[in-house]
Length: 113
Length: 113
Image (cartoon, rainbow over all chains, first blue to last red; front, side, top):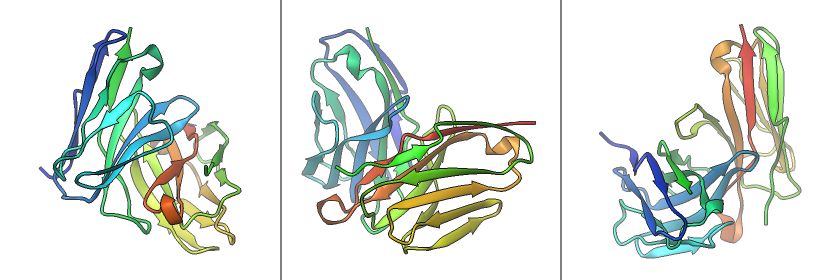
């Protein structure tokens, strides 16, 4: 089915470990985004990508790394996880700019102990 | 950095009541989107407004974009328990922010039968 899928849905890890969250979309949307959602902060943009091999920082990029070698995939890596990175992470995609809607995955709930 | 202040953060009302959620900013947005999010799922787009002063209606929901494109409101008439959820406003900036969304903190709405 067409859509955007995130994996895993739930992840528990320890501080200092590397963890990668996966995002895959089947629409061939140019733009992809990673957000974190914390109570009282809404959704905050971590990184975004306008096309394959083009990525840029968002509001809260520190401690995160992204890549986009293929249009459909946009993995997010926490290189050395910290407790402050415990959050719910959402991936989204859109056709582009000018009021285009963003389509979100169902999120990854990440807990760092 | 563009900021969107959303209020109220929490709203608990009885079925049949009316309510309004506000999003305010000192920045001008090229478009303003409203999303609704259910527990365990990603946000889903309700509406996009792009013209200053624009009003859009979606059944019992009325969305308005301020004349100066700095603020927006969501009004729900005769709220129902099915309206319960998290409502998020999101503004798309211009220039280098084109295509990126800035989200408000969200409004958690609970409608009691």
